[in-house]
Length: 276
Image (spheres, one colour):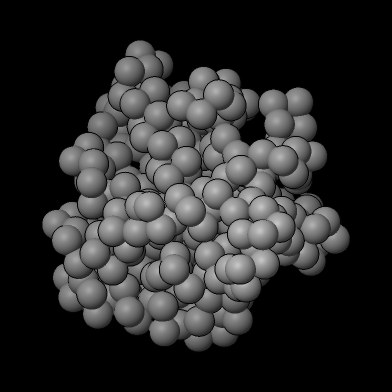
C-alpha cells in the first residue's frame, strides 16, 4: 500500500490545497475516487484514512483533500487554526478547489488511471453533485449523507440585515467549541451564483451513474433530502443504511483499526455500485 500524504498544490484563490493519495503498489490504469469532506470537516477526520485503505485494496486510486478555505493550514491540516480562512470560504471556492484537484490528477504522471468518480459527504455531497453535472471528465457521482439544497443551509440563512451590518455571523463547532465565522461574502456569493449552486438543477441534469446513501437516523441531514435527490434524478440509486448516523458511526479522533459497522456497509455499497 502506498500513502502519499499532504501533497501541496496551489489553488485558484491564493491558498494551497493539501492532497492525500492512497493506492496499491500495482495500481495501473485503475479507476479514481476523489473524496470531498463536508462542512466543518477535513480530509483526516475520523475514519476517512481507513476508508481510503479499503478503496485502495479494492483497486482504486483514492484521493482526498482539504478545501483551501476549510480552516486548516499546511502546517496544521487537522481542525481549524485559521478561522479567517474559514470565514472567507464559500461554495464557489469549493467548486474551484475541486476543479483544480481534478486538473492536477489528470496531469499527474504518477496517477495512471481513468474513470473518475466523485464522493462527497454532507455539504461535500452537494459540491460533487454540481461538479459532476458540469464536468464531463466525471463518470459517476456519490452523495454520502449529502445535502439537497444549499439555500436552506445554516451558512445562507439567518438575520440577513444583522449579518450584512456586522459583516460576520458565527456558528458553534460542537466538537472543538470554536465560534466559526461566516463573513457576509458567503451570502453574496451564493446569491450571485444561485443558479449554478442549485443542487436540484444539477442533479436533474445528471446523465452518469448516481448513488445516494443516507439513513433515516441521520439527525443532521434528514432522509427527505436524499429522497429529494432521488426524485429529481429517477435514474439514481438510493441506498438506506439503517440505523446509521450522519457520519456512519465514526467520530474524531477514530482510534480503532477497523471501520465502524455502518461506514463499512456504506463502503461496500459504493464498491458494488462502482462495478457497473
